[in-house]
Amino acid sequence: EVQLVESGGGLVQPGGSLRLSCAASGFTFSSYGMSWVRQAPGKGLEWVANIKQDGSEKYYVDSVKGRFTISRDNAKNSLYLQMNSLRAEDTAVYYCARGFGSLWGQGALVTVSS
Amino acid sequence: DVVMTQSPLSLPVTLGQPASISCRSSQSLAYSDGNTYLNWFQQRPGQSPRRLIYKVSNRDSGVPDRFSGSGSGTDFTLKINRVEAEDVGVYYCMQGTHWPRTFGQGTKVEIK
Image (cartoon, rainbow over all chains, first blue to last red; front, side, top):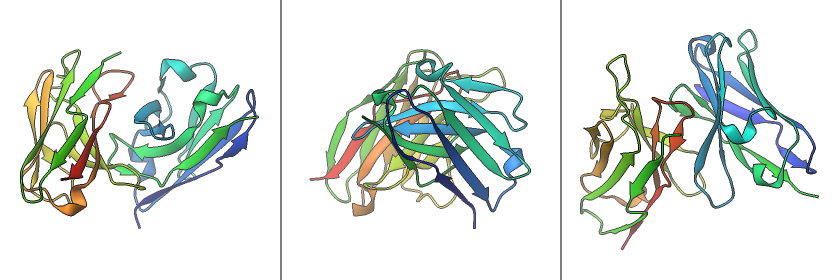
């Protein structure tokens, strides 16, 4: 089955860190650029980061630059998002998405609160 | 950053009637490779987003043909031919031409 499955969400204190993972299956993961997109409670979608197929290029929205790092392991068909120095405004459901959004995961909830 | 502006933000529709959502970008979405990377997504209540349309007017696999996309440059439209109950949700446009990628605010479609 073609799918993306996120994991690693949870509750973290402000200033803390969390690492999200996204496991891909059913398609050739290494052929696609991958993205993380987030959605704060009751709000719209916000693109967060993108990584090229071979990991050579990475792009971030300004609000997470220097704090978040996107990476991938094509041998493990996995995408990651390392989130450091987390803030309350980072609270959201984080989705991994394939390419230009042709496939989405079910999302992982990240809550930043003391 | 490219600002994507959708209208209306709320769209009450009658079952079986057409619906139309506008999306305008603050810069042209035409890319140097000849493509225009404007996508439309549907997010039903409690679900992950699902792409309906890519590169302005191409329907994704499994998307009913009552959905259509059109436009060019900075002005784009998503049309639903005859709204069905399963079309309730929030619709987002997203540009994939410029970094960072940006979404519209979303248009909530509901049944009158």
